[in-house]
Image (cartoon, rainbow, N blue to C red; front, side, top):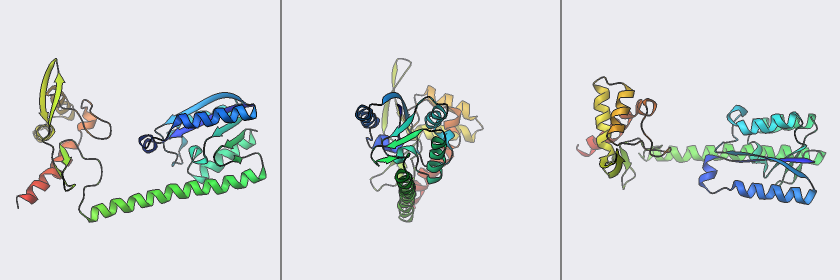
Length: 254
C-alpha cells in the first residue's frame, strides 16, 4: 500500500504553533505500524479549509488529482479538519476517492473510509468540523461587534497610525531607524502618511507616492511586515489612515 500524507495549517494556526512536523511524525508512525510505503507528503501551509473552492488550496487539489490518477493507494490526514471544514467538500471528495478505490485514514479521528462504520463516522466528524468553523466565525464576529459598540478600532491599523494606551488609534510618531543607500535615516510614519496624503491631494499617482516614500526610507506596516511601498499598497491608504488618526485629533481638540 502506497500511502500519502496531506498536512495543513492555516495562517492563524501557524501563529499558534500548530505543527506540520507533528502531522508528519504521526503519518510515519502509522506507515510503520501498518507496513505501508510512505509514498509522498503533501504539505500546505497558510491555507484555510473553510472554503468551497479547492483552487484556493492548490496542494490539496494536487493530492486529489494524484490519487485519482492512481499514484498512491491511501490518503492519510492527522485529523478530518485538515482535509476540509466544509461537509459538502468532505463528502464530495471522499466520494471521488472511494469511487477510484483510494482509501482514507484520519489518524486522530480513527476513520477508515473503506468500512460502513467509517463512512458514518466520516459524516459525523465532517459535520462537526463545519460546525466548529462556523461557530468560531460567529463568535469572532460577536467579538468585533462588541469592540465597535465600545468605540474601538477594528482591523489592522494602517500605515501612520498606532494603538494608544486606551486602544484608540493615534498618530504614529515613534522614531524608526532605517538604512538607505548606506546611510541611517530616522523616520516617523505619521510624517510619511502626511507626505503621501499631500502628494495624493496634489494629483500625484500612486506609483509616484510609492517611489517618494521608499526613497525617504519609509516601509509599509501591517500583517505583511515592513516592505517597500508599491502603487498597490499605497492606493487608498493615505485617505483612510489620515481620516482615522485626524478624527481622533479633532475630537481631542474639541
